[in-house]
Amino acid sequence: MSYRSPMSDITSTKLGQSESALKWVGMEKIALPVLLPVDNQNQALTHCYVDTFVGLEKKSAKGIHMSRLYRLLNELFSHHLLTNKLIRQYLTQSIIDQNGISKSSRVAFSFELALQKKALVSEFSGYQFYPCKIDVQFKQQKFFTSVHLTIPYSSTCPCSAGLAREGLTEQLDAVFEHESINKAQLLDWINNPENAVPTPHSQRSFAEIELCFEGVQIPDLSALVNQFEQVIGTPLQTAVKRVDEKQFAENNGANLLFCEDAARRIKASIEGIEGLVSYNLKVRHLESLHAHDAVVIDYY
Image 1 (cartoon, rainbow, N blue to C red):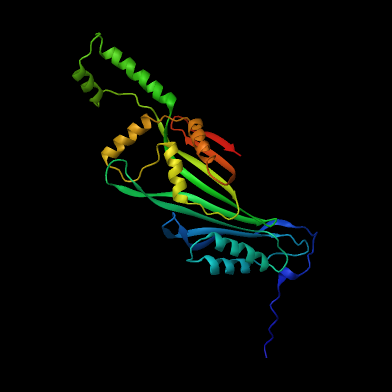
Image 2 (image 1 turned 180 degrees about the horizontal axis):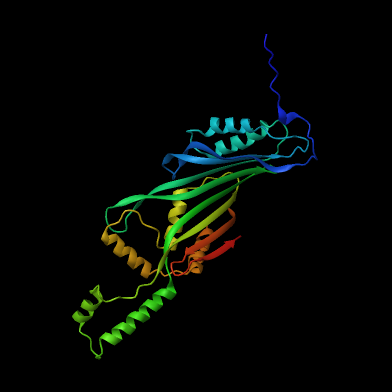
């Protein structure tokens, strides 16, 4: 008869080194298909990467029961709608499953929110992906939620626009020497591709926003994206026709932005959000003139 040794639980053995508590122990980047609320009416099955942790508050415990976290995560969230109630249930049960060694818990869902965006003028439309993260913690008998969004947009440098106007003025002054200018000749000159008209430089830019709330709160992510895109004024486009690209150029020309301008607009919009406890904001303009980025960081 073959001998089978009992399967030992190494987490229950005595520590061989100094005993101390640890803030968070768990796993990152667990792949999970989850139904996400896109807005108040629609939901979409989305591939998420999930981070899950519990606090190791019992100093004498060697480690946590990770497999219990993994099983519970799959049981509650796989192909299920992500709700406030379900998150509270998971965070509460994950502590219970650790058999007295944990008092705090945390779960974070990272994903890309797919929103269909209509072109500015034409009937065209396409999808834009927005990196998002919903991070919920339970500690000291309270729940806390942080929502991370990254909003891409276009920004045209005001300094560059001013220099482009100055350059165009100098060219027109050199070409049209007389006091009166023939309108048809002026328009022909401007539309002639052989005449190099100065243009301001634009850059793809990003607003990285973290919103923090007490309790478990999954906000309307689609509404938040639309809110911030509206205050910025020049969101990125998807499928376009020439008429859309022309309108986009006009919008950028009328919406010149330093990174400070974009940050102040977003900050004012954030401060109007009900129930907000704190926020972190980082605005990055990926300069086309320089090899470095222009950045604003703000928080409350």
